[in-house]
Length: 506
Image 1: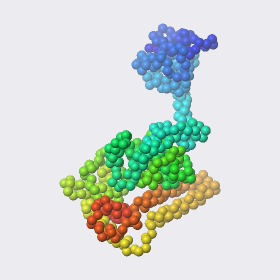
Image 2: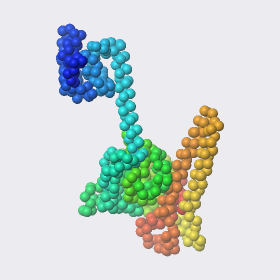
Image 3: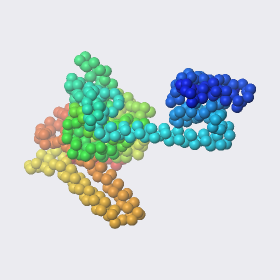
């Protein structure tokens, strides 16, 4: 059946009446069966019209196979809406005819016209999307409040910023204390996990919110809470985040806005993959957590590699060892834990790569008790050597940091020389120069991240605060927790391979 549609917003002397529209459309089809749809007193700026919606429903139900209007603007004055209507007509194989404009999609010329209209409709949609996106990024870059849920621990307050109305956030100091507690527990308690922190907070009757481990993970990863300083700047720079502020703006007081298009990212919004798509701006609100604590949490979270559902391990199978947190697999680089054997009497090591079914290169089985004996022997020998050194040993952390900073300075000099060379280059050489600059910049970011990691390790692990003589005398009396503290202060990493155990001391 044919559908004839007429629309008239208001009666005017110089406008064609809706009755005349219908009559002219009927003249095109003679006595062919048809149904008339009339919207009188409705604008064509949108499709929210009762009879038009009835027409659309009849098309979806297969009642109408052809639509006739007096002019195209009777069906819509908005090109975006018209494009969507034509897409629907195409989907349901409905022909469209405009009587006064010789527009008929059943003819080759009509189809060509339809394609042109569709192109312009798509262009209009993309232009609107681009304007919205540009405005979103511009607001973020200038620290204007962005849409979304108010972050936990803050209250939204209206302000005038750069002469415009917007909003910022101020800490709710009662809740801020809880946030500080969460960060402090996770950063400074080696036994703290997302689950036991969640349990502790949920059981606290003075706290009304129900904390899940997922919520705590997002809370710990969110740079909104950090007092952003130069260390945070370097960390985000190394992660590939686009930074809207110079390092001079990172004064260790304000939090950060982190935003960007992460719809294509299937992992957590704070994963490395997601961060590389993000922009960061020093915001107007005060941060709650100091940068050192925030960075400790990021490193600890990074070490706790998420195990896929197909490789879940029962907690009863994972055994406690004082070497936890410093053992790594040579082949996949992931952390190593101790697991019970089939008879639950012998305890062997297993890397996270094996648990996730991605690492099978280590074929030599090791009992955790044997590894502990080997490490204990070398650790005590190392401590004896340190005890015999009268002068305070050189801080290897500072030496490493200084070395990295020297390398960064050299990279800056190389980049400056290459930038200068661009002025004298041709199109081919400039291309190679640009590629080299990109490589050098990536190397520089990696070294900044390495500096942050070295600083965090040496702020936490130091033998200078430990009585080595007491350790040597009472080693056998220490429990696993004390041994773990000593091991982490002395050992940088333990690499385990088929060839054995390789220990690197600080």
